[in-house]
Image (cartoon, one colour):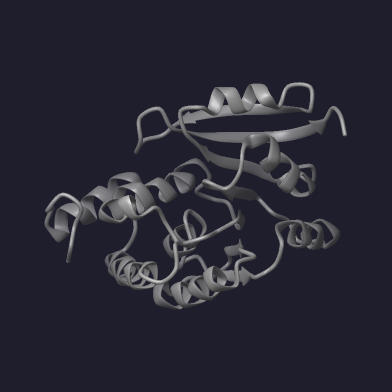
Length: 222
């Protein structure tokens, strides 16, 4: 197995489990997924190329942080899933919980095709929606299906994320959004447009990064 800092396989396994426990089989499937990602990356830009050597920390462990915050959530919706982080990794870690659902929304046809193959590789219970985010969230909001957590990583500024996810958040879902060092500015940019309850979780993986837990958004202007 290739590893980001020449760690052996056991040490990498321990690194992942220090964030969130996964089975040995799930870990091995994630390594197969890494191979798949590297193959597709040669023809489709799925992740920043300089992050590939740090697959386990920058992508897997960073995604698994979501489960440490909401370990019991049963229905996840991941917006702009791209290469599957965090949505597909969460689905893989939950693969033994058959009652948990994972919806990945990706309008780019090449990326959604990758996600379908990735879900099979990981043995993950994931539904891939190859459609616009607005269309999918509208479908959920008009149905009786309860969504527990909405995630997004490297998709859009917070104000835009609230626009995209508001249909679900206003019905009781929780937003959990990865953000970098400029997160305070993004929060400030929402003033006058959105009011919401906020908990800031410091990242366990990257210094100066956070996960923003958002509830009860209220639109203040159109």
